[in-house]
Length: 169
Image 1 (cartoon, rainbow, N blue to C red):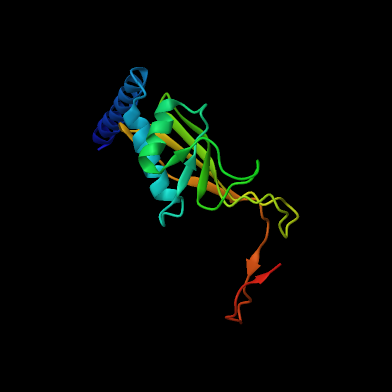
Image 2 (image 1 turned 90 degrees about the vertical axis):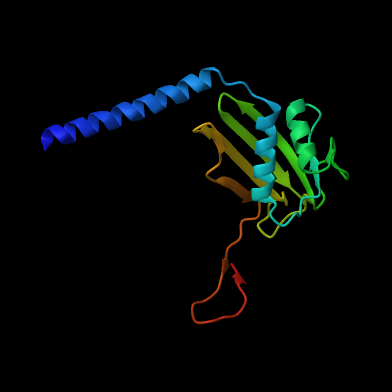
């Protein structure tokens, strides 16, 4: 029985090591293509904009041209948001980073409205910030989670014995 268990364990370790070796070999030959940017843009906006609230993407001219093209395939793209500097209208998504390199991709941005006005938490209103990270697993781009944050620090609570609307702390 021990011999069978040892043989099975060795075979499993060899298979895992072989898969790791193959993944590392694929990564040495990794070349970023337009398809990589396209796939990441499509999946990102399906995740963060399921209700199609993002009407326009603001992509600075300094962004990789392949990233700009991928974003153009998803939504209309402009280089500069309308309105005063430091603000972002509702329906606009400002891309801060969109990069693909060595099997990792990052897309970070800010969703309007960004008014710059002070919130109840005494912080400037900054809309919603998104950070999405992809990696290659088994030859495909995958994203297990993304981060979304806001600048307003408030907590909502509903007492256990009440069914009324949330109270603010």
